[in-house]
Image (tube, rainbow, N blue to C red):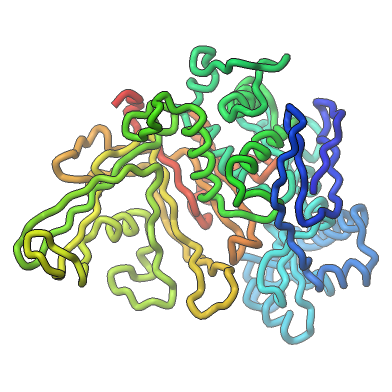
Length: 494
């Protein structure tokens, strides 16, 4: 479990002590009633990293020094075998700089399985086959990233811009931090949370917040981010994490989780605490989630025998788009055309149902089904289903589809909407946030969020508490997982 020190000052990070946790941990609420939360820590740390630390007696200070020396040695990274400068990694045993392909060969030939990605500073183990999290290396990584952003200890331009702030990682909580960053930078939500008229709690503490109210905690986050705070003072989302744990028990614990599942959990908590309808009917709810994120999909099924058409509308808060496996032979989705628009075309393309029961024919027949967007939301969230369970695997680990998916800065949903509901002015969207995933599986990877603050033509990478300005090229080349677009006309009442 993670213990946050009770006393912190505004100019430094809170002290974090990583200690062993029993299988279950008990958290105390405001009224001192214990809430038991099932924790699921990584039981098996990477053995190769443990061997390396023991062999070279690596501790926090020596790890930082060692990594800093490796970076200084390879300031212009190029693979020693092929001279390429893309995706270079440094061997932690012999300090060789190699491209991704030759690093794998090197690991196999000389039994040096550990490398560090020179751009992101993540440790990769070729025996485990993925990025590995280790507290010692992670602390050194973040210290180096922070020193690279601010080498003179003076505020850099990116650190003094209002509306940009890092979030402290509380132990494998990058998935939550990424979702919160995207949520905070949704332009239509800013006024809602900064306005005094939007939300009132019955009982509040001396800081005018209710610790058990998700809206109060999000409003606190919004004020910290948008009222002149800088990235040198990260926000500590411990109360938000606790609220998510208590409402969504399957997300409890310090194990890496799926960012899309966390987003849906956050939506559900906000909706359940702020629904103004006793029936809790999403169709009539006016909470901020249903006002801004709610859309609708129409399914239209046509019987191949009698031609009868049945339609149904389902409310959605995001749209999940299937990705083909790179090994599939799907001619309608060639590897060269992996794009958001192509995914949407496949999503709304007609498919054949082989066993559809037709009420008119009174028998099972084949039919065609077509999905379209019948109600476009104000904020459109697209979930690219990169993680798929392996059919032949006995484990529950999901394989990641790492293919690059291109996506536009501006998106027109008109081709994918129900013909009777098309309003071209309400179908044009602008990208404001991208959540990307680094690693080969959801259980061991790392999430980062790219955000574009309102009224600024600049992109920032939010990597937990580390925030820095990046090029648009980096954003659009990232392995996008969740894409957030807002309607351009800004009409929040439609």
